[in-house]
Image (cartoon, rainbow, N blue to C red):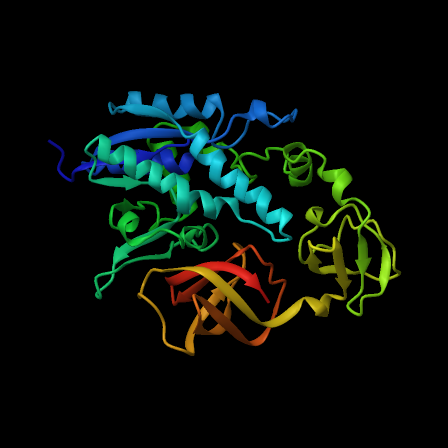
Amino acid sequence: MSRNGKILVAMSGGIDSTVAALMLHEQGYEVVGITMKTWDYSTSSTSSKETGCCNIDSFNDARQAAVQHGFPHYILDIRDEFGDFVVENFVEEYLAGRTPNPCVMCNTHIKWRALLKRANALDCEFIATGHYAKVRQHTNGRYVISKGLDETKDQSYVLWGLDQELLSRTLLPLGGFRKSAIRQMAVDYGYPELAKKSESYEICFVPDNDYRGFLKRKVEGLEERVNGGWFVDKTGKQLGRHKGYPFYTIGQRKGLDIALGHPVYVTAIDPDTNVVVLGDEEDLNKTTMQVNKINWLKYDGVAPGTEAITKIRYKDAGALSYLTPEGSGIQVTFPEMVKGIAPGQSAVFYDGDDVIGGGIIQRS
């Protein structure tokens, strides 16, 4: 009988999830390892090698660590669950002129739900991952995600969508460690090759990082349908033809293939008219945005004018803001200009290190 209970650990085969599983095993949990196959690279029609979380080498690395330390390991095929939601959402968002974050969608709607379902089937009390964040129960009884100790690796931003049921069953053992300490642990556990293993940052179903090519392959006739729309300036003046609105993102400067004698940036996208608006860098600056599809963590809501630090992208440092409930969403007001607010991306609200909640940016 384990000292701390039975726990299902998501193991990608990388350093973080492997060390997380071994730490929990050492702490006396009855660990069950599980590796999730989310995507079949043969459907990508790309020459890139399988990388990241869905390749055979990673599966074997995860299984080997489990076998060597005496706990069971399973491979879970969730390609149908993943593809039906995450990939379709990815495509639909670009076709709507927005910039999606598939990792947030996967965590929120697929990965944790799949883990919890299998944890229940295997009589596991808890689930765990190798994310750099913390989870705890607040004094008000609610479960809250907080930033990891290593702010250069902190992943609290991509976990804002987890609901209270999921958080109540979740352990994040790496949240109190720096990446350098995890690398040393990998060596100490006898896996020096993991400590040197390069990390994968690309979207798992776009292994070559060419999302435009992925969209073209996924949506038959897309390139022909959207090619030849207009670049315009903020007054509506036509500046030249573009390759199709789904192939541009807010804040983009490179790859526009238009020469105007000075740097220009994508400042707005209109999918209905296939128009991409170009402007100067200062045209990206905004002081308000509307955020919908809210999930509250630390509190079950906020009062009008609640102060928070809001992050509008993963690597964003965050900016002072004020939150005001508006219908089913939140109006976010920044006292100072914020650059590059992109509809479709996540906005995450912080109280110190704690995540108050988050949602999807609808408009600025």
